[in-house]
Image (cartoon, rainbow, N blue to C red; front, side, top):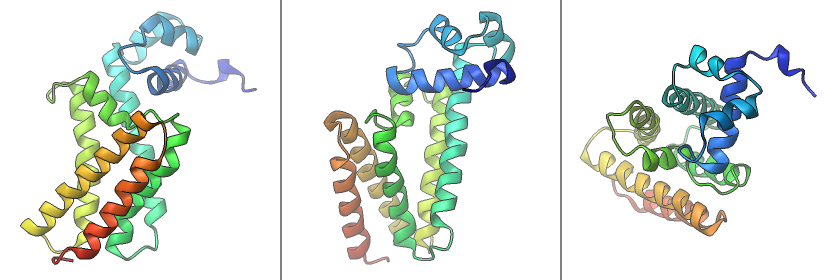
Length: 190
């Protein structure tokens, strides 16, 4: 077991928040629970992050960085645009069980912080915009047809991930992937 004293309090707080937010939700977890799980003083949270909301943003940004890295690694050497888009679904399928079928942490955060202008809402939108940009890039020539296709894929993706949470199974995201593959295969702009 790692010596916790060798891990910076900010990292311990972020690790604890990630575990707790993923399992219980953001608003359901209090500051006292986070600092107890991290084994740090409450003042460490305020020194490192300033507030619980800033910790939530750091949690989302850390996950965003990990998701971007995982996607880049998964599509390395994949030239086909359809395969690159479907990789996002494959990553969601692979991650569903690891996240105890809690659905999408970004959609969960957006539900708990519905104000798009709030820093949490902005962090969620930054991730979603990045995903849409990768799909747009993979699908080639800019234009209204491509934008419409990306929007339809986003709806399938969001629905599949939300379904994972309700079904406590990967079946909804697997079905959404199949539907996206069919949409991509039959889209005349492809």
